[in-house]
Length: 173
Ligand SMILES: [Zn+2]
Image 1 (cartoon, protein in one colour):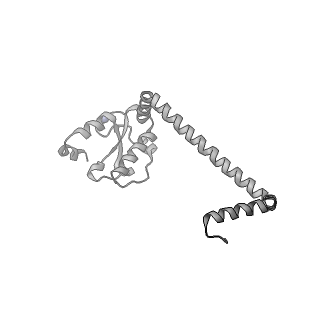
Image 2: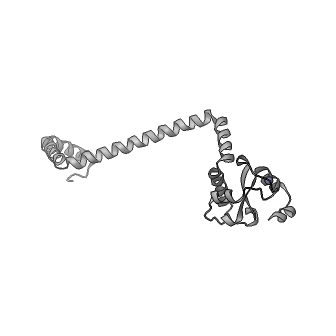
């Protein structure tokens, strides 16, 4: 750049542009023709990404509104699923165990359900809607979240057991 003074430099650049405008346009055009394929492809990708982004943002906004509007209904459905869908139930238990920093092993929920048709606490039959996963040695006592430490009990038995004092907990553990 021949001029250090910014005003003079600006003037120079303007003159330069005016002088070579046609030539620069021509060069740009040639370059575009040479790389046309790549440029168009890049543009397409950018557009696709933008579309995806916009769609996600719209969906997120909509689902937030939907959740707010149907909060009660959704909570009811979630509770129902927690009771009836053992996979869902296990998902929550996994989450809880992970949060408490317990050891987590592979768990076959189907095998557990087939093995424990009778509640391990009250020794009565467990209807599908009343199944709950229980840790034989509670996670709070350092028990692991692994297949061998699990059994199926009634929801009500599980709750009753959890509400008891530590002395009686040891009876079951
Ligand atoms: Zn029971």
